[in-house]
Length: 117
Image (cartoon, rainbow, N blue to C red; front, side):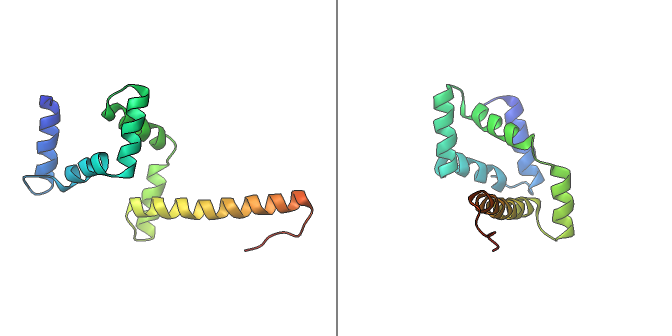
């Protein structure tokens, strides 16, 4: 482990009340080691022949480039949600809208009545 990483871990622990183990870091480790998402990341790292941290970074960077973080934070504050809760809500709403639009387009193509749900 690099000195820089150790310093970052100590800083995170200090930010969380000088606990011996940072809950944030423990959750990250649990995600990477025991979850289905962690398994997918490990499989991707093995497939791409790169370290797990590079696989995680690649996934986060690709995802984050397309997310309007500032707007999500604004919406979260306006609706009294955490930003992560707001992001999940927006994704679920977007899926619903998308599915209805696809059904409507398919119905129009088939010449049938519009589907309204």
